Length: 62
Image 1 (cartoon, helix red, strand yellow):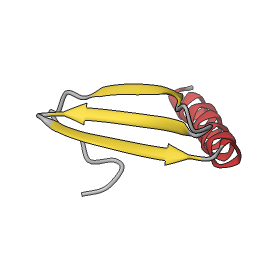
Image 2 (cartoon, rainbow, N blue to C red):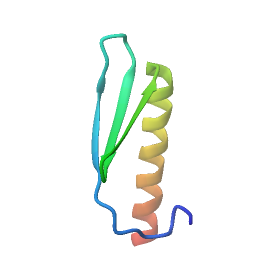
Image 3 (cartoon, rainbow, N blue to C red):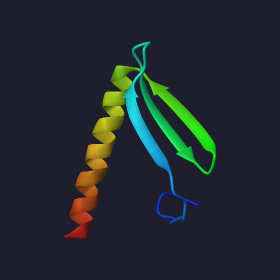
Image 4 (cartoon, rainbow, N blue to C red):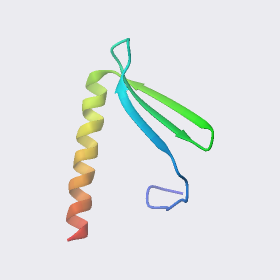
C-alpha cells in the first residue's frame, strides 16, 4: 500500500484550533477516530506541503 493505492473508504476530516492553542486534524472513518494535534508552525508546514501537492497534481493533469 502507498499513497497511489486507491481504497474504497469513506472518511470525515475536521480541522480547527483547540482551546490549548494547537491545530487539530480529526479524522473519523468506520468508527475509528484519529485526533492529530500540531503546533501552529507545524500546521503551516503541513499547509505548505498540501499546496505544493495541489500544484504538482494540477501539473500532472495538464
